[in-house]
Image: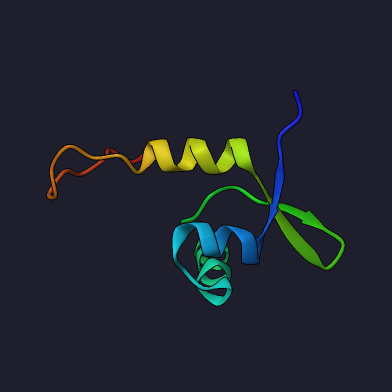
Length: 67
């Protein structure tokens, strides 16, 4: 299966965030999975969709059990 690769700038625009915010997420391990390619990073569209699905909540105070 082939998935579109997004740059940090492209993903940041889609999520209404900044590229530095995504860098912080990568550092903290809280954002979508990413692929390190040379000195840059790319995000698989399928990984972003999976991450977004995991962020879905039905209540504002809902806590997701940690693994």
